[in-house]
Length: 190
Image (cartoon, rainbow, N blue to C red; front, side, top):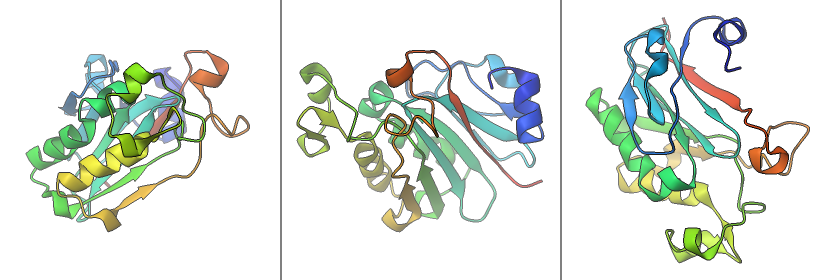
């Protein structure tokens, strides 16, 4: 799906994507031609424009204004989660005039704690309650950041699907070792 024509065909229109760098930069999309921008998330209030991120085992986080005026697509791996991507995403939506308590978020399929083993150097960057027997629960950390930033807990949903456990449904970089990925996207209605 990294091919522009295939992406356009699958989505039915333009999708702004980023050169993802595993950081906490969330950009404001001004059009689908912003493809060359670097960062790990988009926010947009342009009707008809979809914003998207590629994920393999990282978390795709889709956010939207409950009034339907703005959206966000966020890529959050362990590095960006440890650095505060949840807070960065909420701040970017606030920059479009959306109050945190007017946001909803969905965390899509990703490497869940059942399969996501990390070493002690990575585990040390997270709260102890999010690491059990060397397995990291990234979604718990993102949820904590979103709630601490003002998103209502009832407005956050987390997929229970693990990309590593379900080869028939999802690509997994950790399982397959190939640089492919899945596209998560969202847009404001035209």
